[in-house]
Image (cartoon, rainbow over all chains, first blue to last red; front, top):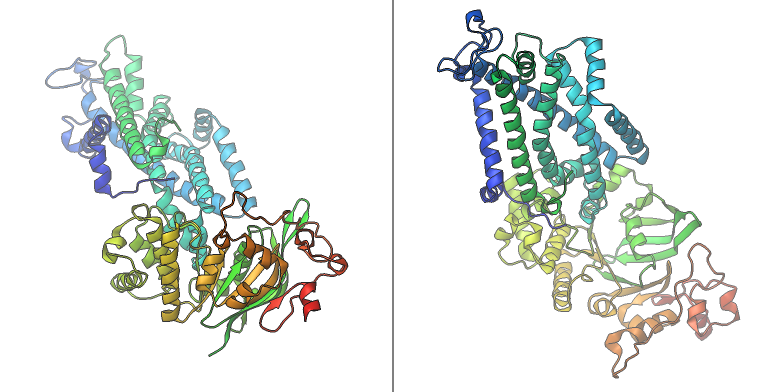
Length: 286
Length: 322
């Protein structure tokens, strides 16, 4: 294996040479900025009802029109983005951390522990996510936290399996044996030698996981299993728009477009990052 | 001054396999005196790696130490706890591995790794870097400050091996184990590294246990030689004596086979006929009997013991001679 490790600056310099990667990065940055400053950018209160102006098309007042209650769709999309990114950020960081810990335990620990953990990962992975979500929601009721919880539980095995495979491969490498022979403890080996070696694939996986997690949140909210009504979410905007599709196509377009952009942006960026950080994987899909 | 750093007595190690225990080492005994370079020669599979792994207690999970003792500076290593053992590794006992291409972490800079080896020291980052620099200079690396910022893949094999040696000597160990450190390098580099090791040994005053299957390197570097065959020590003694008047037939054949000794142009290099016996079902008597050519009745009944005062050999023939 001859990975070219490099600094952040080097990675960025190589990213700039990849048109698709830079496009992805721009989309990602624009969406991030728009979401972070959503409250400032939103032209209206996303919850403000204006029944005389229902299902209106785009106008100077309402750039993306209004929904069935006359609420400004653009403002709702911007605020909905906050929900989406909050879910992505929390769910991915928690499942990445948990997956990292469990995957390292499976990959570096005793064999029986590895077996037990792999069985747990496989069992969790074999549930259909939506069914699992329905069951959880039926048990504790719909809320954003439920959505985050469901996503975390179903994502942990994904991260844990990648970490486990990488750790298993590293474990047999000479430099790990050399470290041991130089008196390093297991904790030290994991933190200083295994972690830096698996950081790159983990970040690539995380960046590719963002659209999947956002899509999942939108899907669950669309089904009414996520955020509860007045709060905007891209999924609930889609659901509202879907019911009134004959009256106005704008809410559907406005709710769907950011989903498509997020998916494209993070996928382009993730793939470009993968090619830069891990040239071996080029042309392969995970 | 003439103390023993490492004393191994009757060490037997076996691996659990499906066919039964594979007896990789059998009653291996030798000593490493302070400040000496001891060479271990032997072909692949003679137990060199098992021996090293036993000394630093990093044996494979299916390995078992059946008997014997390994005494390092008065401490029995086999009786130490895991933590006590870890405190010794990379501190009083260090290792340089065979392949410098894979013994360094590919994603960390040389500087980080060299600072990391000093994890026991309480000194700050600056001091650690200064020490790394000094060590790199001592192993003869040009532009040490620049190397600290580089990654292993920026360095050539010879440079990496020097870095590995610098890391191993960082803690000024009493014993440096070198596991075929020059096998993966080309011949000119080999000579340089050997010269450097010799100088470093003189400067640091440590003992070196040098494992190799290259006779020339052993002859160049070592004070004493231990010849191993199929998990046993078959001959040991001062380097010159073993090389000039080998007593064990295996050592004699090994020396005949050294390509450096062949003066005549030939298409057929000499070989030792036969192959290593199975270590799961050990033959009775002498382990080298079937390939020896000089065996007689006693060889198939009785296992020869390592005998002699300074220059020892495990062969019934030397019994007759003396």
